[in-house]
Amino acid sequence: QVQLVESGGGLVQAGGSLRLSCAASGRMFSMNVMGWYRQAPGKQRELVATITGGGSTNYVDSVKGRFTISRDNAKNTLYLQMNSLEPEDTAVYYCNLEGRLITTRQYLQVWGQGTLVTVSS
Image (cartoon, rainbow, N blue to C red):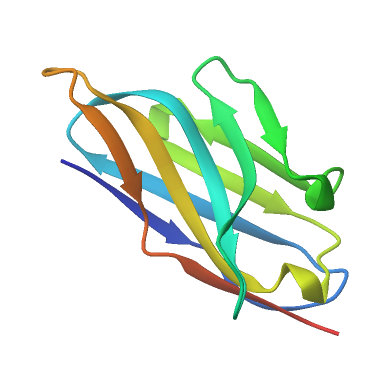
């Protein structure tokens, strides 16, 4: 079907920056919305940011002004630019896709495997 592979996580000091990437591959699809979620140790997975097929973006309040979600349609890649990172941003970050296969119009809900972001104080 469709696979998502995240990359770009790592260890960074507070105040630093990272850029996460999420590459989609497999069958051709149309995107309704793609997003980044995160799950910190002992906590539930939470929404970080989303971007629709039309380019509208949405962010959780805690990252507004610091994180930017974007996509490159030609590369089938989603990005999350994270600036001014804080220890509270430490989590596994997951990429998510909601859409439909082009050929069959089958609904898709796909998750990546996650990439770990650790912010030290």
